[in-house]
Structure formats: C-alpha cells, structure tokens
Amino acid sequence: MLALMVVTLRLYPIYWFIDTTRSLNSQGERKISTGFMVVCSAFLAPSELAFVTSEWFGFGPWWHHPFMVLILIPLTALWLIWGLRLRSQFNAYVHSRQGDWLEASLLWTVLLQQYYLQFKINQAVDAGLLLRVPASPVRAS
Image (cartoon, rainbow, N blue to C red; front, top):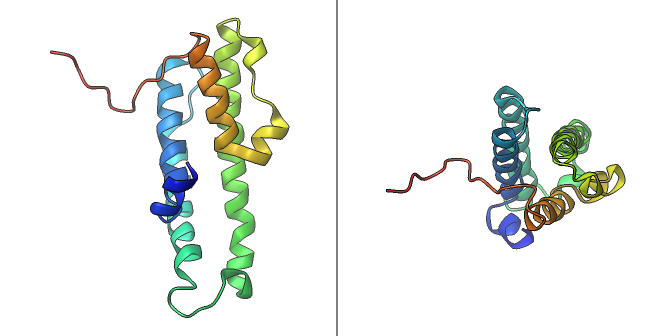
C-alpha cells in the first residue's frame, strides 16, 4: 500500500476506500452511499495532489502555507469519517456472520485507517466470513 501511495501521488488510498466500500456494500445490509464516496473523493483527490506537487512547483513544503494547514483539518476529518463509517459497516457485517471476535477496534482504525482495516478484512477472508468481491465482477464464460 505504501509503494502504491507513492507511485500514484497519494491517490491510491482514495481508490482503496472506494473499492473496499463497494465490496462491503455488495455483501452487507448496511451501505455507504455513492454520493458520500463522490463528495469525499472530490475533496480529497485534488488536495492530495496539491500536497504532493506544492514542493515541485517552488511553493515549498505544504506546511509553510497557512491555507494548506487550514485545509488539512477538514480533509483529515473526511478521512476519519470515511474510515469510521467503513469500520462500522465492516463490524456490522462480521457481527451478522457471528464473527464478533473480528470486529475492528476504534483506536486502531483512527490511528492506522486503511492499513488496519485491510488487516481486519484479510482476517475475515481467511476465516471464511467475507468474500473479497471486486468492484466490477467479471462473468465467467
């Protein structure tokens, strides 16, 4: 994940959140709306690119600019809200499958977000409670 984040100029985490949300939406009763994903992505993608490219174009590090520091607060809130909603959706799903022992922790979700959630998803897949479904399934002939 870290390598993909660097190669994609910090856009991979947004893709991961979208793909994982879609996968959980297809398997559980609790859904996160497409509108929510679009709004979050519309704000997060340009800001992630701005943080990466600000130094490239001679603006210096992003933390030297008051505007960038001020925008960091609502963007961090968006990441947290999305991560916590995904955690809630995951926990509801594993709870409905009698996998309470797999529930994702609030603390680790806040601290490590997609890394921790991916770890929990992998545990659920290994336990047979969750099927990893791609966002656009390919039909077998």
